[in-house]
Image 1 (cartoon, rainbow, N blue to C red):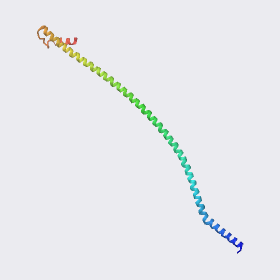
Image 2 (cartoon, helix red, strand yellow; image 1 turned 90 degrees about the horizontal axis):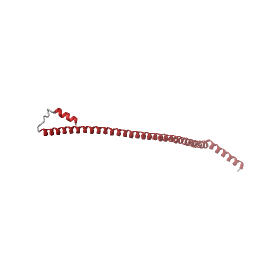
Image 3 (tube, helix red, strand yellow; image 1 turned 90 degrees about the vertical axis):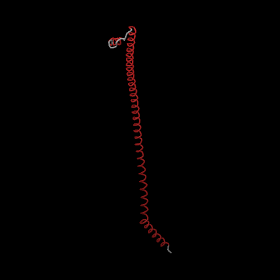
Amino acid sequence: MNLNATLFAQLVVFFVLAWVTMKFVWPPLMKAIDERAQKITDGLAAADKAKNDLVLVEKRVGEELRHAREAATELRGGAEKQASQLVDEGRAEAARIIAAARVAAEAEAGAAAQRAKEALRDHVAQLAVAGAEKILRREIDAKAHADLLAQLKSEL
């Protein structure tokens, strides 16, 4: 066999194989490689976007926490102020009730003292009449001397 013919045949087979590979095998391989590269690129872009979204969400969460803390502090301050105001109002109401009770007790005591004075006057008048009866040894007519008894009550 001739070396030139073999070399020529191998060269033809190589080019045919290269052409078949470039025509039928290479495009699907390149397509698969391109798709894989695109998926990797999309994945990296999605990861970057997710990272940026995470940063934004963390900022938003931080702001919401700050607002919530401020609202809680404001609410607590308002509650403390309202509680203090209610305590002050309760103290004022208690003082008013105590003062009213004292006035009522003093009025009741004054009325009781007045009733006791009246009862004492009546009793003294009855004793005076009884004493006068014993002294005079005769009975005094209560109707006839009603004015005398009223005058005696008022003097006592």
